[in-house]
Image (cartoon, rainbow over all chains, first blue to last red; front, side):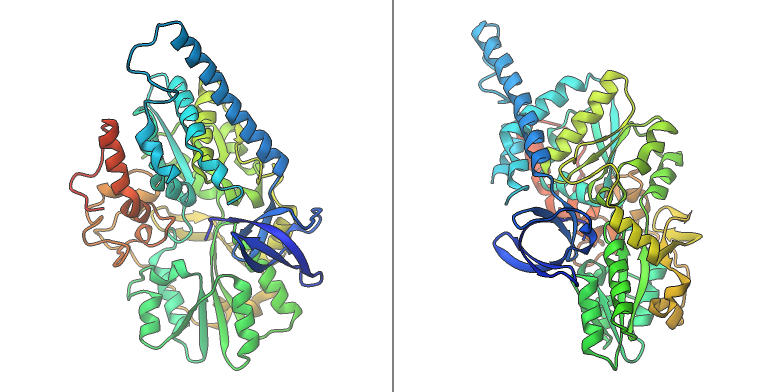
Length: 110
Length: 383
C-alpha cells in the first residue's frame, strides 16, 4: 500500500470535493487531490497517488535534471573506458562498457 | 510508464554499479533500507547481487503490515465479527495472522469483511448502508495516515454516523531511533523512506546524522533510485560527510506536504505507547483519533479484547524486521511459512522482506551463479 503510482491529471472533476480525473497507464480514475491544496496544479501535471489520494506533485524538471546527471555519470565513464581501450592498456576481459555485469541487470530490461 | 521505465534503464544502472564499485573501497559497510517498498525493489530486481560483496543492504521496519502485532489483528477480527458490522481493510491486511486466524478466515466464518482500495471507499459503503456499522482498519505510516484523516473529516462534514476507524497508524521516526539504540545491529547508514517523506519531509531525520553520526539518503523505489541512493551513501562516507540527503527530489520536498501534516494534526494525537511486532512497545510511536473525534473511533464504540499475544515461537519476523537476520535464515521460511500459509507478517505483504525474497529469490540465485558471485544465499531454500 506504500508503493505509490504516478498518474497524469486529465480533468478537474469537483472543486469542492477535491476530485480530479487522472490517467494511470492508460486507465482513467478519479482521485482526491485535497492534500495538494496550495500547490499550483494544472491538467497535464503528474502526481504520485497513494490509496486514491494524490500525495505529491512530481517535479518534472527535477526528474529530468536528475536523469541527465545520471546519464552524464555514464558519459564520463564511457569516455574513460574508451580512452583506456584506445591506449591499448585494457586486457581481453573488458569487452564493452560495463560488460562485467550484464546478467544481473538483464532482467530489468525484460 | 512515465517516471517508472526511465528509472529501470540497464545502461545507466551499469554505470551506477561501476561508480559503486569505485566508492566501495574494500571496507565492509551495512546500510538499512527503511521501507518495505525498497526491500521489494531490491529483491525483485536482484540489486543485492550486483553490489560489491562488501556492501550489504539490510531491511528495516518500514512495512506497515509487518509491524502490526497479533493482538491488534485479534482486535480487528473481534470488531469484524460483531453483528451489523461491515469491516473494511486494505487487501494486504486480509491474510495477516492473529492468534485465531486471519480476517479472510473470519470472512469465511460469516463476518462481512470487505477489501477497499481507499478509506473513501469505506466511507461510501457507510453512506450506502445506513443500517450497518462500517469500520475501516487503518494501517500504515505517514504515507496513508493523511488519507484516513481526510476521510474522518469528510465523514463529519457529511454527518455520517455509522462510520468509524480502527486506527493503527504508526510513525516512522521512533522505530528508526529504536533501531539506532538497538545493540543487535551495527549500521553505516540508511536509505530513507521515499513515500513517507513526501508527507514528513527530510527534516525529521536530522537526528540520525546529528545524534547518531549516520548518513541518511531519502531514496525512491525504482532500481536506479536504489543504486543512486547507495552511491550517495558511499560518496558521503568517501568524503567524510554525514548528512541527510535527498535522492528522491522529484517527489520529496524538504518540508514534506504541509497540508497533509496539518490535517493529520487536526485528526490524530500520539498514543503514549504502541506495540510493534519485533520491536516491542515504543513510546509515542503511533496515532489515535483525537478525543473530539471519538464518535469516529472504533476503539470508542467496540469492546476490544486488547490482549497482548506473543508471536509464534518458530516465527522470527522480529529479527527480520530489525535486519538482524535475512528471511532465509528463519527456520520456517519457505517450509511452514509461505505466502499461501504465512505464519509471520513478513510473509504476507508484497512489501514484507520474506514474501519479496520468497517470490523473487530464485532470480537472485540464478544471477549469482551467472556472475560467479558468492553472496550467502539460503542453503536449500525452496523459493
